[in-house]
Amino acid sequence: MVAEAKVPGNIVFIKIPDSFARPIGDFLVDPAIPLPVELGRNAANVADLADLADLSWEMLVAGMLRFLAYQSEHEHAAYYRRFIFAVKPGIFNELSEAGILNARNKEFDIAEEIFLALCGLQPESAWPFVNLAVLHEDRADELDKIGKTELAEAVHDKAFAIYRNLLAADDPAPEACFNAAFFFLKQRNFDRAIELFEAYLDIGDDEAKLAKAREISATLGERRDRDILFKEAFDAIRLGHEADGLDKARRFVELDPGVWNGWFLAGWAQRRLCAFGPAAEAFAKALELGGDQVDICNELAICELELGRLDDSRRHLEQALRLETDNVKILSNLGVVARRQGRLIDAAGFFRIVLDLDPSDRLARQQLAELPAGASS
Image 1 (tube, rainbow, N blue to C red):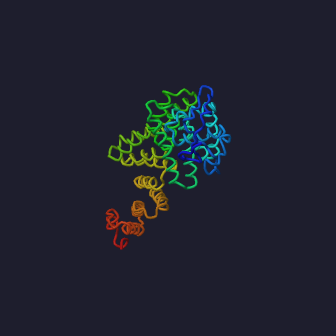
Image 2: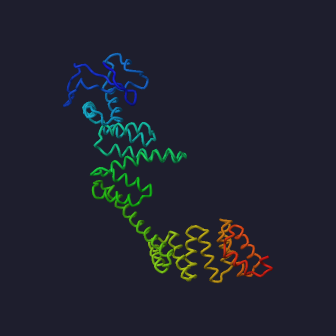
Image 3: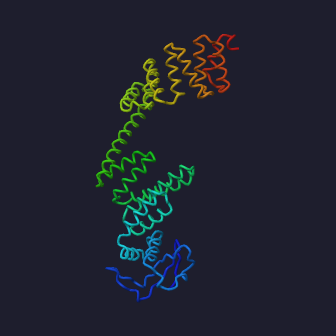
């Protein structure tokens, strides 16, 4: 018995005598090929094996599995695979179940070792690689929960690398497309997720998964269309095409009336078109739906100011100011409302605060200059 190069794990190579050459079913043991042997966690070296009688099939299989986990392209890898399947024909399914069970129990190290061994044992199969990728995803989620974000990102990158390799194949496996779609969905890469769900619809054969892929891709497609519509509405209003932007904003609201952003866009377009009444109603709806209170309150207050509802305007501006006490825009608008209400000293005070925060604010300087001397001094 001759010890050879050490490999990951507590493994050594042995060469068996010619007398061990024997068939195992259709497989013939070749004594010329050294075998990796799992010695056990406490064994120091090959001398711990008193003689070949101490060897068991389990030790041989364990050694070859661990070896294949890290050196799946070794010159004797194909021989080791045939050896393992000859000794234990059902080992792939047996280990797959064990790996999944350990993963569910969050025994991540054990599960990872099992899935790596399966990847080496059957590299042409996508399943062990998919299971390994899902394991990395689950592990990254657990690390995120305890605040280890950098480590979680590193583990997440391992999952991404596996999916990238699986999807780079000429004919990606259906299970790779299906699971990778969920991976990209969690990353909010909706276009890629849709692409992969649609790929599964073309090549998959699991009815339950086909139904799920069809449902999610349809939902994501609708969301993608809404996102495009929202962006087009926003850009149109920003570029001064308020009527076109308002039309798109209204269509967005019809598709998703429970989202505050659409109501805000509709209000923004109408306010710029000087349709202050409808604009105020849209901003009030956006506020009701839990939108960004500072911006919505400010826009709503501007509409109320133009409609002569000065008390309402002041109330909404004060609500925004409580959230952002140094917001120059809010302070300036409070000054304008105070001036309209005849509270000139208050108005001057607001404009001075604005100028303290931003000495270059021309509107505040102009407003302050227009106030009577007694109020602005």
